[in-house]
Length: 340
Ligand SMILES: [Zn+2]
Image 1 (cartoon, rainbow, N blue to C red):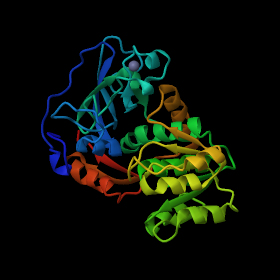
Image 2: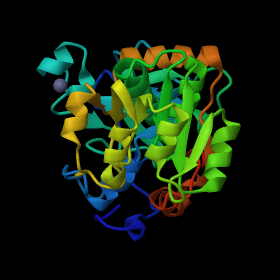
Image 3: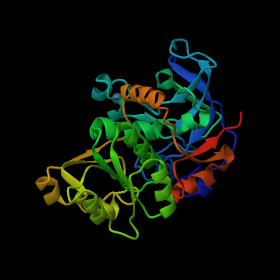
Image 4: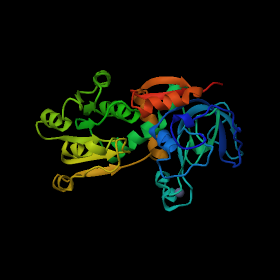
């Protein structure tokens, strides 16, 4: 991208191939990347973090190790890898206590670092992980950001247990569909909402127990009905805006709400009385730790869950691919295939 703005700011053109400058770095020949909302927010200039322009977007990628720095031991040239997007500064309070994801100078692919909508990307070797067994490069590129986010939200923060109930607001996006997959494997009862009957039908095929069309029905009333007026244990609301209050109202006493963003607006009306009287917990999170990522990779290998891929576009059609996500047409992940 050459400037902030709409998809017309994305250009398919030649740039410089990255070179290794630190002994712990590697160069990856990318085979696939995937689209995330963060890419769109970065393109719009909506994150508050200035980018160095021109800039290559893309937080997620998978490919083959092409070059390694002198001190790299965990991967070698030719290894297929998927990339863990964030790198901490290594020096702050949070990095020194193994919480890079809270680093005050956090560098994420496609943000402070050049991203994965490219043939080559440079990254710290510690961020290279083996592609899970049986995964294609496209599946491996679809997993990191969404699944690490879901893992931290649902497993670490919400601590979802078998037999609990969960409400997912706005099934369709990468995070929501991955949340559904993980929650069903854990053994939870899952209710999903969407404005699209087609997306609700797809969610039911993936194991959702109930689907609510929130354009036709007020979802909080249906949730209360479905739970005998108890409410659900966990709500995953990455939509915010107008629905936030309904999300709080859908929770049981002691319920947990988890969020990783607000695609419909970040300044919702809170119901503080409900938060207090029902003793609710609200967890915000972005990304996760390498330890959580390793745990997640073991879970994916054990359960054979694969990311749901909505569509695959060639790299040169990144603008079309982003538009599909920006206008919420997708179910699952939109992936870019990178020509070799
Ligand atoms: Zn740091």
